[in-house]
Image (cartoon, rainbow, N blue to C red; front, top):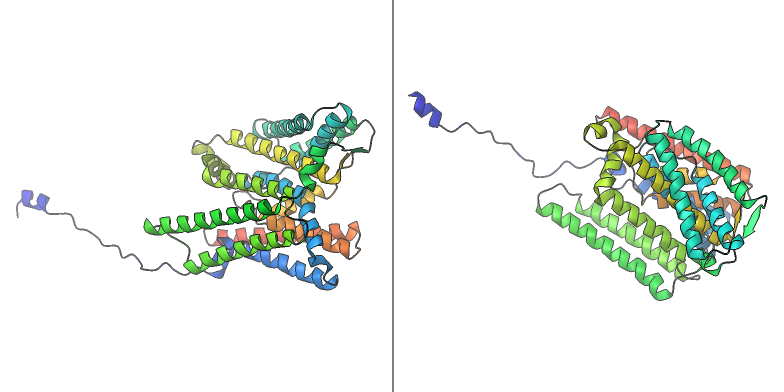
Length: 407
């Protein structure tokens, strides 16, 4: 055979056998991925059942559960900010001090200087953004560890709010608009309609995404798992609405918290910025070599964290009808614990903003249930500390198991 004929012969091809079905995931893989919130949800149900039995059913009354949700609003907003920072593998120990400082700025402007509610709230938010910007610049460009920066900031901001109050321990808020933010309830039409509309949009998005991936040949989760996910979310949303409507209605502050979580979820999952946050938290050096501006991402995240802390402070001042010079000693622990219990890793690069709601509910349920049982602050703090250690230990064990499997 001549050389020309040899060159015209087609190159040999190799066939790759594609399995008709993907291997069934193990229980451990389910708990680490799509259904990772199930253990947290089961923990919440166990806590609720325990306090329901030990308080004679008082814990599960609509009035108490409505108050419970109002109590965790500030924790949830601060946990949202803490989640953003934890996704970077950093930590912010100043969120409680920043939250209280911003509420004091708002209170002093409205009550002592006659500034309108809108401008006072804006000043509080700007104050939060500036404090976060300072923290971020020190961490990102001066390379001071975030633990040291935010610890020093917490001490400094604590002194600043004392200076602003000028020796006054409590400043009462009289502005009706500020008071209404966390104490008003939505009309029944909005209270039922808005959550139901959001639920339908969520179901539509999940089903559309499932059909799109299946049509293009991409890997999809099993249909039974998808249906279970939709059923669980539907039961939680509609159950919460029915609970609120059986008392006074859906609190306005719950809509604020849900809206903020939704915005952060969209930012983290639907924008390049969100992908950069997860990339930096997963491996900062690899992210830098991929062309991501790591210092800028850190500055932006710390700024967002403190701005969210300011929003939490405004809502807390609205609900408490006052601002105080004393920072809640458990607020920082509660915000970080809610994020970690909800599945956000302390090591960065892993977690979802939605599951922090379950973490906040667990923290709030423990405090609320122990209050109903007339337990003191000492018992509550010990219990919360144990729960936080368990959550961090579980995260470390999961990380270690994934490392052994090369994931």
